[in-house]
Image (cartoon, rainbow, N blue to C red; front, top):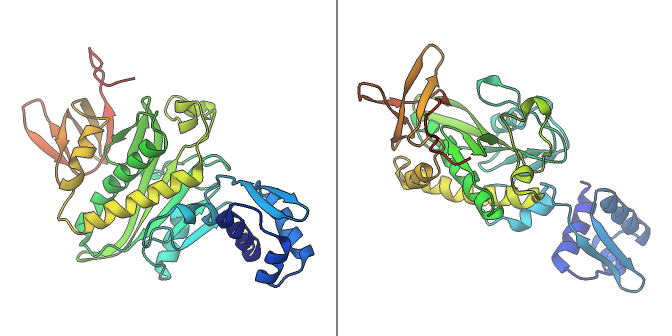
Length: 333
């Protein structure tokens, strides 16, 4: 958004009432004609702005889009989202955030795109990223921890996203699927992808990316059996700006607490209460191995605990978890 246009938007949003064209001219040192052009640009972008002769302009409605002008006023963070890059489209927000991190972007820098042409999930799977409906966001972190602790971060992010969804969409029941998904009605609602650059004793940066299906309705036919959205689950559209602000607020809080701890013990109750895999018979697919057993909780380091047929408890550090059929279904539909 043009900087002057953005300033006018913030001025209207902060005031809440009518702001005269003369005031905007004086504050921005531009002509009335220029003010009108910026108002026209805001209307074209979807902002409802009332104009009354002798009174000025009044913002009637925001767009709800995840842009800095709408997200920033909702933030209570110190760093998350304070450096905010908003793109109409990009190949992948994670790729853009990694490039920024290498160039020195500060912790908490955020890249958000309205659409992606090369969105990715785990195992290099494509993430469908149409415009105007979902959240595609990546956050730069610079945790002063050894790289061995970085695999805990996806679960911190998952807890934050779950909390944000629960706060903004109280009628939606969602679960956390180890290690990095949010599930609703047995289908994926959100995926998280963390990538890092590090040395054995030093983490240079971590990029936490997530794709959250918000107002996608319907889901593309080929994905309907495995993906869902907030709109589908609740029957109502959600405000993407509010959702993103809620995620950033909650994530920064949990992340800072995690930095002061030695492990994930402080959020294990949350992770286990909302665990999608809780107590279920599982097949864990790793690169060269398949493990089978029952979920027996999480370790403080975020490892999935798997009870095998002989009663052995195996800590699983990574892999793709699949539910095995049960004679009696134990998870809600």
